[in-house]
Image (cartoon, rainbow, N blue to C red):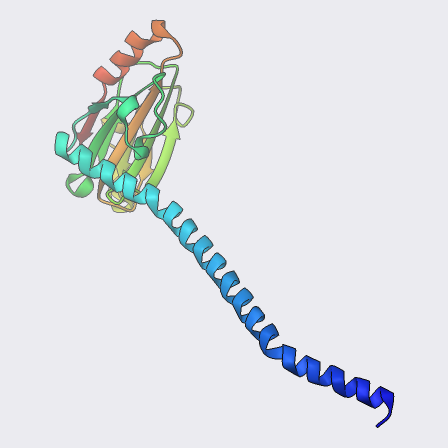
Length: 203
């Protein structure tokens, strides 16, 4: 056997001897990669589910202290996640609604430098958001209703709804949350009156 043949045979035997170890290393690397990808997917799913569980918890907590169509003031410092990041510059109130008895009209004659409102279904999903730029002027006056109820309102518009913003939602029950901003101490009495005069009523 010539030297080149002897060398080739030696390299071939070496490659064959090493191939099981190389295969084990490849399998281990593949398993580690799958584990990392799986852990990443689980982490993302958990992050997506945490807000939903927190928001559903907010619905349960509000139901324990508030009846339907009742404006309930909320301490922003102790607010649950659905109600937003705690900020003492904001005052908040919430109202549980059930549209099976009719549309819900939310309004106040009070004024605030800025207000926003969010409507959630009973599962904690945000169905709609609006603020003081959504309607005519900066008055809070909106009606939450189902698409079927909207058809009836178009046919016969109640006088109380003539200045209202209409919010159609694909759910019959849920929570609406209103936030108002008080930029300094001088605004706090006005914002307090904004909520004190707020109504949430089935029409």
